[in-house]
Image 1 (cartoon, rainbow, N blue to C red):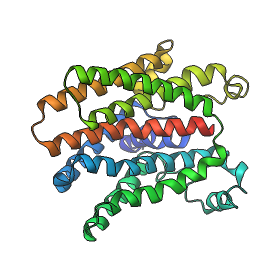
Image 2 (image 1 turned 30 degrees about the vertical axis):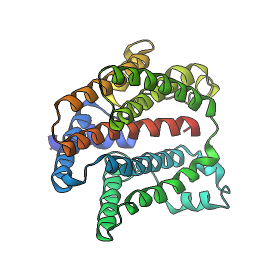
Image 3 (image 1 turned 60 degrees about the horizontal axis):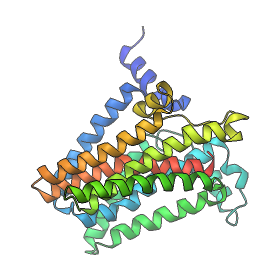
Image 4 (image 1 turned 60 degrees about the vertical axis):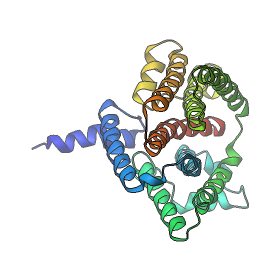
Length: 295
């Protein structure tokens, strides 16, 4: 007799991982609820730590999580195996270790749990030693080697340049809006940058790379939206990822305005900003690195 709960878990959670089919509405909602609950718990535990500096210090760990995910993508696609001898054979050793093979701990939600655990451990170590700057140093020390691992694959720099130009245009426009309405915080600008990066990466990958690159046109190696909303705009609306980009930037601008005007608690404000930044920067950097590395 079939177990409805097991069938649901398999259909909406396990199969998407096994089939590389991205998110669906069910797992998106469940992951969002879990993420919000975990975030609330962390806020209660670390409330007094949520300062502007803490946001900056946490960014290396966001970069780490996204980059580790792309290392998994590159191994899963077979691209990294083509560079086994690179970096004095280090690439081959990483591939052979199996540590980054595609699986529950290296994709969502496992990769978020792993990154959060590393981040919390770094916070506790730096607090125990009473060295606050050790926290970001640990993040950078872990992130840079992973970025180095991807360096032999990085060839699609023109697409990265397109993304950078688009991000800078939206960043400039948002600064003009912020100046007009008296919003001058660094956090608001990072939030806009993060979501502009995510939206621009999706736009360039789906609307430019997929329409111009021989990898997609001749070999069928194309990009598609991993997330439900992103996929909706990319598949249902012609050049819809352009609209997706604009909506993400508008969201970051409006959210920043509301936070700045309504939040009386500075720690609470920084906590909300950190969430907004993470949910833009994490997928955005992953998409950029995947596009540059061609995986």
